[in-house]
Length: 265
Image 1 (cartoon, rainbow, N blue to C red):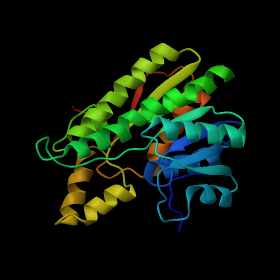
Image 2 (cartoon, helix red, strand yellow; image 1 turned 60 degrees about the horizontal axis):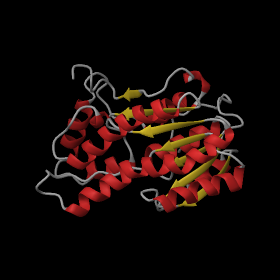
Image 3 (cartoon, one colour; image 1 turned 135 degrees about the vertical axis):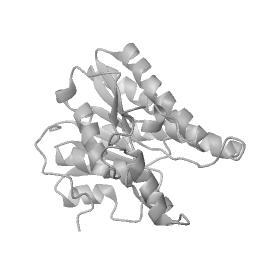
Protein backbone atom coordinates (compact mmCIF):
# COMPACT_ATOMS: atom_id res chain seq x y z
CA UNK A 1 0.00 0.00 0.00
CA UNK A 2 1.29 3.46 -0.89
CA UNK A 3 2.34 5.27 2.29
CA UNK A 4 1.38 8.65 0.80
CA UNK A 5 -2.08 8.12 -0.72
CA UNK A 6 -2.82 11.86 -0.91
CA UNK A 7 0.19 12.47 -3.16
CA UNK A 8 -0.79 12.98 -6.77
CA UNK A 9 1.27 12.65 -9.94
CA UNK A 10 3.99 15.23 -10.48
CA UNK A 11 3.51 18.22 -12.78
CA UNK A 12 7.15 19.17 -13.29
CA UNK A 13 7.08 22.15 -10.96
CA UNK A 14 10.66 21.52 -9.79
CA UNK A 15 12.17 20.27 -13.03
CA UNK A 16 15.88 21.09 -13.16
CA UNK A 17 16.06 21.95 -9.44
CA UNK A 18 18.19 20.32 -6.74
CA UNK A 19 16.73 20.09 -3.24
CA UNK A 20 18.16 19.13 0.13
CA UNK A 21 15.64 17.78 2.63
CA UNK A 22 16.66 17.11 6.23
CA UNK A 23 14.92 14.59 8.43
CA UNK A 24 14.10 12.98 5.12
CA UNK A 25 13.59 9.33 6.02
CA UNK A 26 10.48 9.69 8.14
CA UNK A 27 7.27 11.64 8.47
CA UNK A 28 6.92 15.03 6.81
CA UNK A 29 10.49 14.98 5.49
CA UNK A 30 9.96 11.62 3.79
CA UNK A 31 6.80 12.88 2.12
CA UNK A 32 8.49 16.13 1.07
CA UNK A 33 11.53 14.39 -0.40
CA UNK A 34 9.34 12.04 -2.36
CA UNK A 35 6.99 14.80 -3.54
CA UNK A 36 9.84 17.07 -4.62
CA UNK A 37 11.35 14.22 -6.62
CA UNK A 38 8.00 13.48 -8.20
CA UNK A 39 7.86 17.15 -9.24
CA UNK A 40 11.19 16.80 -11.05
CA UNK A 41 13.80 17.75 -8.44
CA UNK A 42 16.94 15.75 -7.76
CA UNK A 43 16.94 15.30 -4.01
CA UNK A 44 19.66 14.94 -1.38
CA UNK A 45 17.88 13.07 1.41
CA UNK A 46 19.53 13.79 4.77
CA UNK A 47 18.90 11.98 8.04
CA UNK A 48 20.80 11.01 11.15
CA UNK A 49 19.44 7.47 11.02
CA UNK A 50 17.28 5.29 8.79
CA UNK A 51 13.62 4.75 9.60
CA UNK A 52 13.68 0.99 9.04
CA UNK A 53 11.32 1.21 6.05
CA UNK A 54 12.52 1.27 2.45
CA UNK A 55 15.02 4.13 2.59
CA UNK A 56 13.65 7.29 1.05
CA UNK A 57 16.25 7.64 -1.72
CA UNK A 58 15.51 4.09 -2.84
CA UNK A 59 11.79 4.79 -2.68
CA UNK A 60 12.34 7.82 -4.90
CA UNK A 61 14.43 5.82 -7.35
CA UNK A 62 11.75 3.11 -7.46
CA UNK A 63 9.29 5.89 -8.31
CA UNK A 64 11.46 6.99 -11.25
CA UNK A 65 13.23 9.89 -9.53
CA UNK A 66 16.84 10.71 -8.76
CA UNK A 67 18.16 10.97 -5.22
CA UNK A 68 21.09 10.40 -2.90
CA UNK A 69 21.17 9.65 0.82
CA UNK A 70 23.43 11.60 3.18
CA UNK A 71 23.79 10.31 6.74
CA UNK A 72 24.43 13.44 8.80
CA UNK A 73 23.67 15.10 12.10
CA UNK A 74 22.36 18.49 11.04
CA UNK A 75 22.40 19.94 14.55
CA UNK A 76 26.05 20.83 13.96
CA UNK A 77 28.08 22.65 11.34
CA UNK A 78 30.01 19.58 10.19
CA UNK A 79 26.89 17.62 9.27
CA UNK A 80 25.36 20.54 7.41
CA UNK A 81 28.54 21.19 5.47
CA UNK A 82 28.63 17.50 4.55
CA UNK A 83 25.07 17.51 3.23
CA UNK A 84 25.70 20.55 1.02
CA UNK A 85 28.98 19.09 -0.24
CA UNK A 86 27.23 15.79 -0.97
CA UNK A 87 24.46 17.48 -2.94
CA UNK A 88 26.88 19.60 -4.96
CA UNK A 89 29.14 16.61 -5.66
CA UNK A 90 26.20 14.54 -6.89
CA UNK A 91 24.13 17.16 -8.69
CA UNK A 92 26.33 20.21 -9.25
CA UNK A 93 24.18 22.78 -7.46
CA UNK A 94 21.59 23.37 -4.72
CA UNK A 95 18.41 25.35 -5.34
CA UNK A 96 16.24 24.49 -2.33
CA UNK A 97 17.01 23.72 1.30
CA UNK A 98 14.20 22.22 3.39
CA UNK A 99 15.14 22.40 7.07
CA UNK A 100 12.75 19.77 8.37
CA UNK A 101 14.61 17.81 11.05
CA UNK A 102 13.02 18.18 14.47
CA UNK A 103 12.24 16.52 17.80
CA UNK A 104 10.23 17.26 20.94
CA UNK A 105 10.49 16.31 24.61
CA UNK A 106 7.40 16.34 26.82
CA UNK A 107 7.61 17.77 30.32
CA UNK A 108 7.24 21.05 32.17
CA UNK A 109 10.34 23.19 32.50
CA UNK A 110 11.19 21.90 36.00
CA UNK A 111 10.73 18.30 34.84
CA UNK A 112 13.02 18.18 31.81
CA UNK A 113 16.81 17.93 32.02
CA UNK A 114 19.42 20.24 30.56
CA UNK A 115 20.18 17.49 28.04
CA UNK A 116 16.50 17.37 27.02
CA UNK A 117 16.47 21.13 26.49
CA UNK A 118 19.69 21.26 24.51
CA UNK A 119 18.75 18.25 22.33
CA UNK A 120 15.55 19.97 21.21
CA UNK A 121 17.14 23.39 20.69
CA UNK A 122 20.09 22.02 18.71
CA UNK A 123 17.94 19.77 16.54
CA UNK A 124 15.12 22.21 15.87
CA UNK A 125 16.86 25.59 15.84
CA UNK A 126 20.62 25.13 15.50
CA UNK A 127 20.00 22.90 12.47
CA UNK A 128 18.37 25.85 10.68
CA UNK A 129 21.26 28.12 11.62
CA UNK A 130 23.91 25.64 10.49
CA UNK A 131 21.95 24.54 7.43
CA UNK A 132 21.46 28.04 6.08
CA UNK A 133 25.07 29.02 6.83
CA UNK A 134 26.29 25.93 4.98
CA UNK A 135 24.19 26.50 1.87
CA UNK A 136 24.54 30.28 1.55
CA UNK A 137 27.94 30.24 -0.22
CA UNK A 138 26.47 27.92 -2.86
CA UNK A 139 23.39 30.10 -3.24
CA UNK A 140 25.55 33.19 -3.62
CA UNK A 141 27.72 31.51 -6.23
CA UNK A 142 24.63 30.52 -8.19
CA UNK A 143 22.90 33.88 -7.74
CA UNK A 144 20.01 32.70 -5.60
CA UNK A 145 18.21 29.98 -3.71
CA UNK A 146 15.21 29.08 -1.61
CA UNK A 147 14.89 28.00 2.04
CA UNK A 148 11.82 26.34 3.52
CA UNK A 149 11.89 25.76 7.28
CA UNK A 150 9.57 23.49 9.22
CA UNK A 151 8.26 25.39 12.24
CA UNK A 152 4.97 24.48 13.97
CA UNK A 153 1.61 25.84 15.01
CA UNK A 154 3.24 25.70 18.46
CA UNK A 155 5.74 28.27 17.23
CA UNK A 156 2.81 30.69 17.21
CA UNK A 157 0.50 29.28 19.89
CA UNK A 158 2.02 27.62 22.97
CA UNK A 159 0.93 24.31 24.46
CA UNK A 160 1.39 22.67 27.82
CA UNK A 161 4.51 20.73 28.78
CA UNK A 162 6.63 21.42 25.67
CA UNK A 163 8.80 24.40 26.64
CA UNK A 164 11.84 23.59 24.50
CA UNK A 165 9.74 22.66 21.48
CA UNK A 166 7.62 25.83 21.67
CA UNK A 167 10.68 28.01 22.20
CA UNK A 168 12.61 26.46 19.34
CA UNK A 169 9.74 26.64 16.86
CA UNK A 170 8.92 30.25 17.75
CA UNK A 171 12.58 31.04 17.12
CA UNK A 172 12.40 29.31 13.72
CA UNK A 173 9.42 31.48 12.74
CA UNK A 174 11.21 34.73 13.57
CA UNK A 175 14.57 33.58 12.23
CA UNK A 176 12.76 32.87 8.96
CA UNK A 177 11.57 36.47 8.83
CA UNK A 178 14.98 37.86 9.75
CA UNK A 179 16.83 35.80 7.13
CA UNK A 180 14.35 36.92 4.47
CA UNK A 181 15.31 40.53 5.23
CA UNK A 182 19.06 39.91 5.09
CA UNK A 183 19.23 37.68 2.01
CA UNK A 184 16.50 38.94 -0.29
CA UNK A 185 15.97 39.51 -3.11
CA UNK A 186 18.14 36.63 -4.35
CA UNK A 187 17.21 34.17 -1.58
CA UNK A 188 13.66 33.59 -0.41
CA UNK A 189 13.13 32.18 3.11
CA UNK A 190 9.76 30.91 4.37
CA UNK A 191 8.45 28.38 6.86
CA UNK A 192 5.46 26.14 7.31
CA UNK A 193 3.64 25.82 10.64
CA UNK A 194 1.96 22.41 10.70
CA UNK A 195 -0.69 21.36 13.15
CA UNK A 196 -0.83 17.82 14.54
CA UNK A 197 0.35 15.50 11.78
CA UNK A 198 0.18 11.70 11.51
CA UNK A 199 3.92 11.08 11.48
CA UNK A 200 5.38 7.80 12.78
CA UNK A 201 6.68 9.65 15.85
CA UNK A 202 3.26 11.08 16.74
CA UNK A 203 1.41 7.83 16.00
CA UNK A 204 3.83 5.94 18.26
CA UNK A 205 3.20 8.47 21.03
CA UNK A 206 -0.55 8.01 20.64
CA UNK A 207 -0.22 4.23 20.72
CA UNK A 208 1.86 4.40 23.93
CA UNK A 209 -0.68 6.57 25.75
CA UNK A 210 -2.72 5.00 28.59
CA UNK A 211 -5.85 5.61 26.51
CA UNK A 212 -4.85 5.81 22.81
CA UNK A 213 -8.38 6.64 21.65
CA UNK A 214 -8.58 9.58 24.04
CA UNK A 215 -5.11 10.77 23.05
CA UNK A 216 -6.05 10.69 19.37
CA UNK A 217 -9.33 12.49 20.04
CA UNK A 218 -7.52 15.24 21.96
CA UNK A 219 -5.05 15.81 19.12
CA UNK A 220 -7.75 15.74 16.47
CA UNK A 221 -9.69 18.25 18.54
CA UNK A 222 -6.80 20.71 18.35
CA UNK A 223 -7.53 21.06 14.62
CA UNK A 224 -10.83 22.61 15.55
CA UNK A 225 -12.28 23.01 12.08
CA UNK A 226 -11.22 19.90 10.13
CA UNK A 227 -10.97 17.75 13.30
CA UNK A 228 -8.44 15.22 12.11
CA UNK A 229 -4.70 14.80 11.94
CA UNK A 230 -2.90 16.08 8.87
CA UNK A 231 -1.29 13.56 6.55
CA UNK A 232 2.45 14.14 6.06
CA UNK A 233 1.99 14.82 2.36
CA UNK A 234 -0.50 17.61 3.11
CA UNK A 235 2.32 19.46 4.85
CA UNK A 236 4.70 18.50 2.05
CA UNK A 237 2.43 20.17 -0.51
CA UNK A 238 2.65 23.41 1.47
CA UNK A 239 6.43 23.10 1.41
CA UNK A 240 6.25 22.47 -2.34
CA UNK A 241 4.31 25.69 -2.90
CA UNK A 242 6.96 27.68 -1.04
CA UNK A 243 9.74 25.93 -2.98
CA UNK A 244 8.33 26.68 -6.43
CA UNK A 245 8.11 29.85 -8.51
CA UNK A 246 4.36 29.79 -7.82
CA UNK A 247 5.25 31.56 -4.56
CA UNK A 248 7.79 33.91 -6.15
CA UNK A 249 6.46 36.97 -4.27
CA UNK A 250 6.28 35.21 -0.90
CA UNK A 251 9.15 35.55 1.55
CA UNK A 252 9.52 35.84 5.31
CA UNK A 253 6.15 34.13 5.65
CA UNK A 254 4.92 31.54 8.16
CA UNK A 255 2.40 29.43 6.25
CA UNK A 256 0.01 27.86 8.76
CA UNK A 257 -1.24 24.39 7.78
CA UNK A 258 -3.19 23.40 10.86
CA UNK A 259 -6.72 22.25 10.07
CA UNK A 260 -8.09 25.34 11.79
CA UNK A 261 -6.15 25.15 15.07
CA UNK A 262 -5.34 28.86 15.11
CA UNK A 263 -8.68 30.20 13.84
CA UNK A 264 -9.61 31.84 17.14
CA UNK A 265 -6.16 32.09 18.72
